[in-house]
Image (cartoon, rainbow, N blue to C red; front, side, top):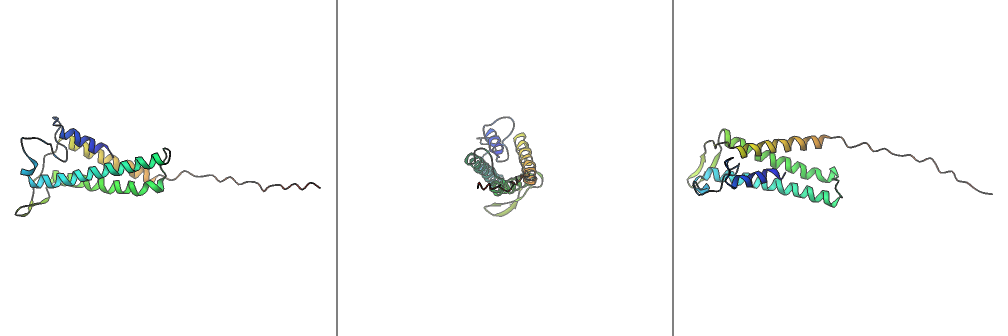
Length: 159
């Protein structure tokens, strides 16, 4: 859950791998000059930041329970992470394949496709992997608990 945000930080660092789903920070082309890209970059940034916060809550939950996370307590956070990661991946895919309408000073405009870069593709792979692992974790059957039946206590009556 922390990997998409770490990859986005790598994208902001100006590596040749690209700017990631939220765009690069640079002086050559400001995000404010591209309102559609800026709008969806903010949404994706919120998505990966919320995903990281959800991962932080799960990590803290494991610390509070001595390293083992009770499924009943972690399930709402895992489901929230699934929802956030799914929406973020869907927005990334739609902005890279068809384009989405975005607000502008003259109203909503249909934006064009944004280019796919290596870091954005890595973030997408991480989101899909996270989704797959979380679904497997949610569908795992709980470990069977054996009940030890105690034999009735023999009451010894010394007379």
